[in-house]
Figure 1 (cartoon, rainbow, N blue to C red):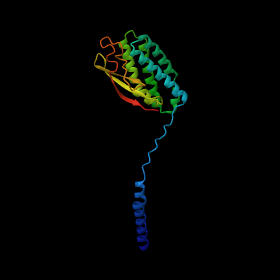
Figure 2 (tube, rainbow, N blue to C red):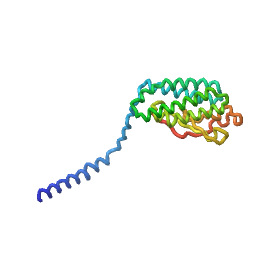
Figure 3 (tube, one colour):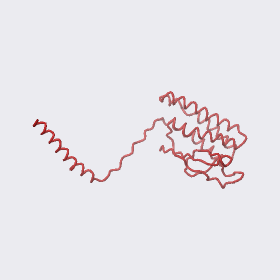
Figure 4 (cartoon, one colour):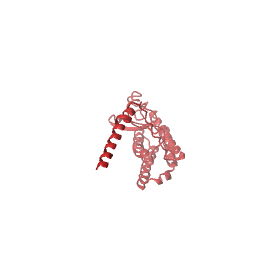
Length: 205
């Protein structure tokens, strides 16, 4: 019994010394900023480069709609499809089968809308196809492939179609430059070019 009591007493003394000595002195020390975890790259450089080409083609397509240039929009949509086909999706084989199947399905839908845009004869319908493409890219596509490219902003126009239907798009810049109302709207001209807001962003780098 005496040994047990002696052990408990020693444990109490050690705890008291730590708490009132070392622990209190530690609280007086200046705060050291926490080091951020280093983001590890999941994909190969070639995969990320192909995805960046895909995003660049999308941005050029978006810019063409800002200018209401149907031919440029179609031309960049063709480059967009080629860039999508050039992404080495085989790298995703290490992910779950569910992710692979989801990427395959969403890629098919993106290409279908892009092909409809390319065949379009009405800019409003083409912009609707572009809106569908945008919604498929974010959050679905970029989340599924674990996008590692430059920062992107997800932006929204609350009156993209008929002044009442909203639509989203992606941009590399935080400034809103609206591809649905654009610079040459039949009613607003360029007056609604900056109509919209930033909904979200992808801070990958």
